[in-house]
Length: 219
Image 1 (cartoon, rainbow, N blue to C red):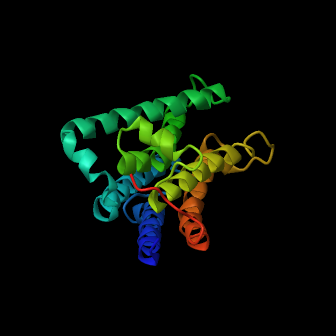
Image 2: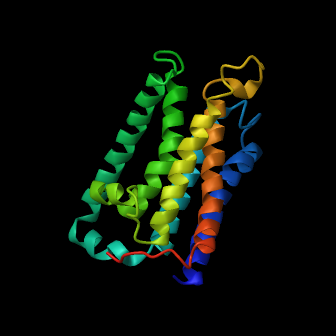
Image 3: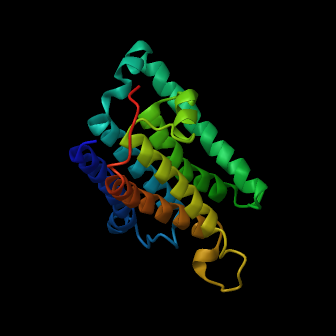
């Protein structure tokens, strides 16, 4: 494992964090009364779009060439459409899971769905960018000792930390603190965002710390 590969991973993750920072501060120069809490749905849309754009550009530029042979065998248009379908399926699946865990079924449908979109952006989108619409590769990466590169290793960490952040963000909602960020799904989306950012920072550092004992099988 080369230190340059870890540096590339770190720089890519820092740019992803930068996209979230942009979505938080830049829109206030163009939109009146914009804030993460007061105009939360607007922020969710902007954050999802910016994180998506940055992820697509970054993976096109710095993505390892491990799957170049696979991607060339299938038409790019069909692959892109498959990725879009997988992303939409992820959004609807998360939405259903949130409802099963207590989110309003009829009220606040848009809020719940946009929460599903932002969580899919943090979890499913990087998987699609790196692995493509290949369920076998997804199962391999998220199984024990199934990763074959530092990029897949970081994919594990950021996905788990995003879901954990969203789950932890639900704990303050039933408390009677009467804070504006306790309104559904603000605390959950903030938890997912902080979890995603934490995973982006932790994964390169964890890989660097354990680089001597990490071994990857080449596909």
